[in-house]
Length: 366
Ligand code: IPM
Ligand code: MG
Image 1: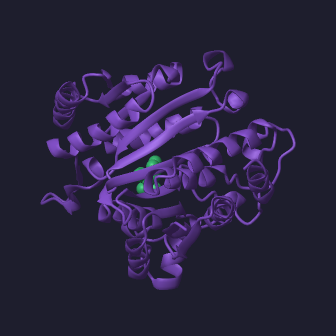
Image 2: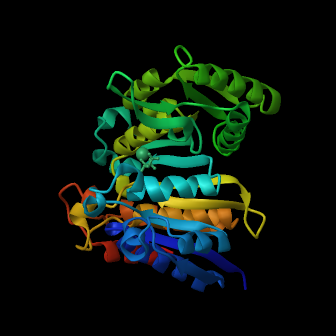
């Protein structure tokens, strides 16, 4: 009987609520498919600060090390906002986790079911068939991690802060390889997004992506776009993209834009993968919903669990090689939502169900 060993880092506010439901869905699948689940829970984010004095406690890191994947909830919120920026849950938990496991490839599906086009701020006439695109974001380089990164007082008393945007060719090549794999699983189209008219890193980015695709993936139709134009094109006609790949900061911004045009953050999952293989020889990964901790609705049992459930599906796909089970969960979510079972964020004033009932509907479709 195959055993699925993974760390469960639920985090703060709605994190534990939606995580509970994702675990219930996984247990159901495990029962049906004769799998053994071996999740280990550990504190992260605000929960880490409160219980261990650190957003990413050493014991949590060890739990992650011991598993084949990390199922992550979300971290942060008003309770810890007064801490210095570098100690806040988002920066002190998520970024070190990404760096520690070299999770350089963040895959964010931008999916809006045609039945939910009303949830998008875009006119329905622009997206008659919903949205179905994928953002591949480089996650361990660029402005987020480049050195120097510091604030100094200058001799004249003025204060100066600096972040450094830095990329090596090897970093660009490995994210391009991920993007090629994603493009090959879809329509063989890839758009690389950069700011090569201004930034040195983008000049190297564009040249490297072009050379790498020409050498290793001549079957891929590659295009390039400046990031400002890409932001505009996403709002104009999102489906002109199929898969797009971009550096860390641009990907952070564009993926939020993608999330909003896809209707609800409560529906979007993500996978962060790296070079590291797990005990099964598959990519070790961190799987998390795109939305945050939603402190305003925490504790009310109304949060949408779908993004967390879909993130669990991605974990089955990438880190456990269980494509069929992943696709089954995705289909069950789709059927539940399009069949009319919806949490408040996607109910458009219609009848809204709670977190648990939403997951029950998914389970009923499995
Ligand atoms: C994301 C988030 C994080 C990021 C924050 C919480 C550090 O916005 O995953 O997109 O900027 O990468
Ligand atoms: Mg972001």
